[in-house]
Image (cartoon, rainbow, N blue to C red; front, side, top):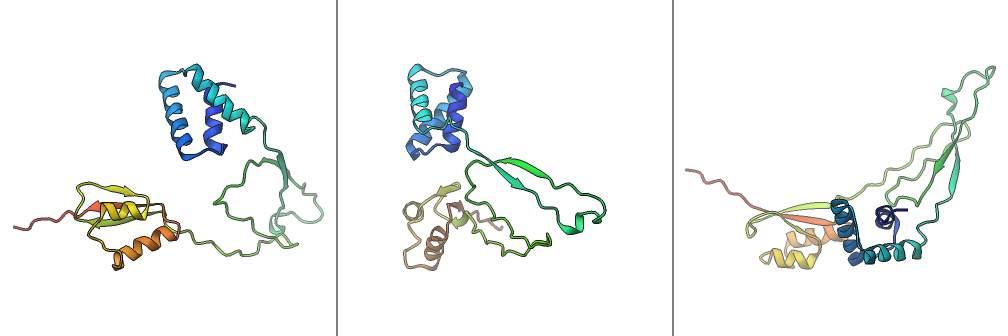
Amino acid sequence: MKPIEMLSAILQRGQITDRERESFEDMYDRIHRYKRCSDKQKAWIEKVYFGQKLDEEAPVVRRRVIIPTWQQRSKGSATPRVEAQVESREPKPNAVPSRPTTKTGTFLASPAVAKSHQVGYVNYPGVQREVPVATLSMFEEVCPRIRRGSRQYQKVADFFANGGVVVKVKPVHTAQVA
């Protein structure tokens, strides 16, 4: 297996720290750009790849496909049941759970999970360009005039508490009227 393929697997499935992720992403970009990597880089990639056992494949899960009754033909004609093989890697964290079915093949209604917004926006006159902010402490540094007890500060704090990832602080452009 080539180092670029191992590096791709590490970035996709590996359990690595933020600092290692940054280093591996930089290494991935450089390998694509220059089409080579050093022996030390290869050794590091192989150490993490084989150390985390990313060379082992995930087991294949068989799932049965159920055909709803309204799609089936009459009882006289035989409708074959279809079985499909689906490769199942690790479950996605944002995946919607499968809907339970009744014996007739119709689906039961399942409640939709509301997902919070992950990017927020704040207009602030003290910045010259859009600044991404990832934590509340960074927000205090970028926007010092917004005090802790204020309503706007509380909204930003609630945004981060409810799963928000980035607040983009945008400059206020005031148009001058002549």
